[in-house]
Length: 380
Ligand SMILES: Cc1cc2nc3c(=O)[nH]c(=O)nc-3n(C[C@H](O)[C@H](O)[C@H](O)COP(=O)(O)O)c2cc1C
Image (cartoon, rainbow, N blue to C red; front, side):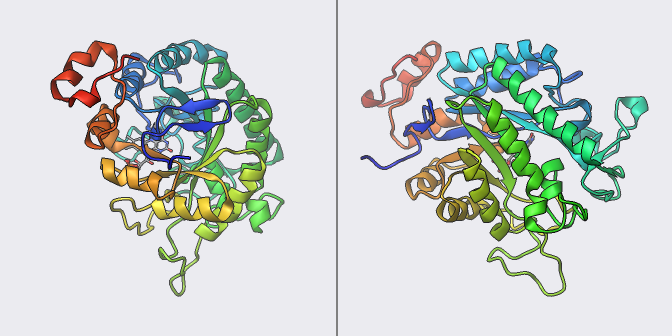
């Protein structure tokens, strides 16, 4: 059996990603009432033209109050399906698989677009003042004060994730990713820093992971058995050191050890891949950002929880990405900002790694000009 590499296909249930490169979910703040716009079409379609094996939408809100900003993409209504389907049809026409990330912002909702600063948007400007959270603890001074969800509120959130999954399927997505990272609602339940509940959704590890596990089970139950489910987690709140040591006098928050334990539970719920990000739940965390700074989390979770993982975070070089796959630190790499800089990064990486890879037939004359003879293109 040949070893995996960046351009080896990845089989997940009945789908085959043509390579191990995914477009990481990226908010575009370009929707009205949650609808995908021309911008979303061009943004996602061009990354499929660029050769990414899997193209994820941005965090797509399961309820209007689940948006981060009023301009977020949403999937709380059947009316959202058509425009999303237009996008998935095109992604498929390019040989890419289509992924949707579904999420709920919780206490980090109703905020401005990032290029307009960090500002709470009031209802008079299209925001909302009922922010859901496990406990009434704001993220930071700039954010709104949330209300702790009661049992009915928790049940309604679960139902919203399930309804979103039904709609995502109708829109033609192959992969659904549950967003439980970056300090949004599901991560807020996981971390003892944002979850101080005393009922069965707070306190012990088993209680804090309960909502993520319940949402995952409920989504898995309606997402067809032949299609994969991913969960994105923040592997740590970064209040421990990289080695897992907790600085004296601090609370550790959510940690990599807990992420390993959660990933094993998710594996048993039928999750196919854990997408290993980090941070976002604590405003003052010190994050050692640098090339591949989160890859070790993907490697450890893969090894210790026995589940496929995705590595993300400052993966920018073809050799770096290929090494992550070859050394089996992860099964997939997700790129965000590098794919904003260069939507054709996968085609460039293939050339750098000297892997013949198909170009869109419309662009084949450009590929011919630079590719050595053995790199001759095969039209998709
Ligand atoms: C413009 C932008 C929007 C983002 N929106 C999301 C999002 O919707 N969901 C998510 O999980 N991560 C989001 N992220 C984080 C990225 O998916 C990724 O995890 C992060 O940028 C690190 O990868 P990179 O170093 O390749 O950019 C966003 C990042 C950027 C730059």
